[in-house]
Length: 391
Ligand code: GDP
Ligand code: MN
Image (cartoon, rainbow, N blue to C red):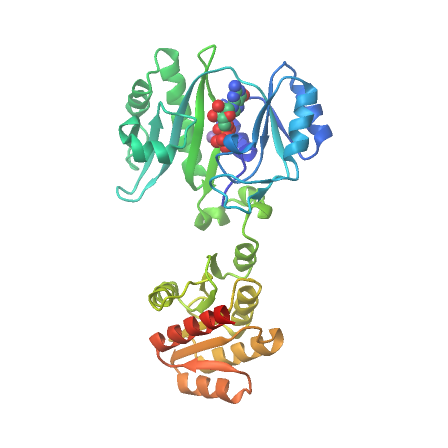
């Protein structure tokens, strides 16, 4: 789960990481009131959407008067922000963060993630802050310095000094940097974080370190331990179908193709997508209904797949190991009757009671395309999807 910048900055403040003074606003009047309250003569208005690259996309604006604050907020609120990370449909902006403007001397990068190769939380720092860090990593990897934390020993003071010196910090800044690093590490562990980024971490005109931007992703598997963080979820920033799937414990990821896939088990789901691609088709989604699925979940899964206007054919691929294929067939028939067969449905059943399940589908009077063989099922689904093209 992703947090908004303003939510991440609230956590930063709790952990003693310096951030600019700011207020979040959901309408123009309160944005102007927030700026008036903050005082000073320079503000920055920042669109709150789950994406980076906002600066280049008109989602971060400096304002030198309350009128300019109002104008920036008016422009951003209600817009869909399109950045290099969002795709062409962009993300809705329902809130802006109004902050006191900062005087920037240097922009640094500081991030932490779990490095799966070493199984350690790893900090990354770079003097090339404020830039797209993926680009820095690809073009000038030597500009990124990393340090991995031994989980038994915890973060060591030398690691902070090592990164600080490599960033060209000196004197009190080294100490301040060490505090920020230690706070990030505590926050990372306490909240089951999977990624933290401060880009940029700035050195101000007075030489202070301040987190100007903040990005936190929380590990979904740890979310049940953090009701306070769950409350920060903003579904307007998430794929609507993925959010609906999460409600029904379905493992669903939206993709670009036109073959809706319903499969039990993540491994079989991946193999199904591979086979669809091998036959020249494109899956519309990844969907694992779970190993021990029920007729009700099959119905929910069907609804989800059919709500995607891209879908031209549904491919059901169920292996009856824990579940019985006749029960699944019953679920498929109920779902198809209830929702209507708007597109062809190819069903491959294999395993416990497979022939009974296939017979039920045949006898249902509905127009299922059935198959016992996996390759044949994929081929038929691709054929049904491309038939639509020729019409
Ligand atoms: P992102 O583009 O989504 O990563 O948004 P950021 O919060 O990182 O802002 C983008 C850029 O806007 C920063 O790298 C800064 O150069 C600039 N910026 C943000 N806040 C301020 C500010 O208070 N003062 C000044 N001068 N520039 C700012
Ligand atoms: Mn940024």
